[in-house]
Amino acid sequence: MATHWTLGCDAADPHRIAAFWALALGYVAEPGYDDPDGASLVDPDGTGPAISFLRVPEGKAAKNRMHIDIRVAGEPPWEPAERERLIRAKVADLVAAGATAVHEESYGPHLGHVVMFDPEGNEFCVA
Image (cartoon, rainbow, N blue to C red; front, side, top):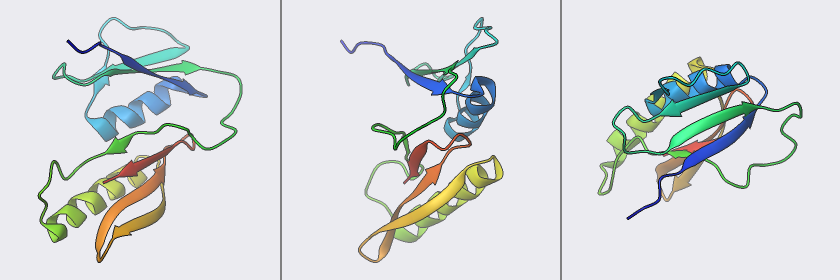
């Protein structure tokens, strides 16, 4: 049996960054979690891990050693043009929500993933 776990994250503004990641992942605020210096998200289907954000005084100082990859195209096999359309649509939504697109990586002639920064500068990928 797998162990239930929570991804814990530091944040300057936990509620703002939680709202961003809720939109990015389709998560919701954890019912009953009410903390002005923290926020917690859960998968509404109950299958994914929880994600918590705690206010810290220091800013981000270096590249993340671990990050989230958002997989919008599902599992392979993929139709390359449709996969690229899904990736670009998600990137556009996330940019509108405060993220920054950093660069694109290709797998041969096809778009592989887009590296992005969330609103607090944390790296993640959309694939």
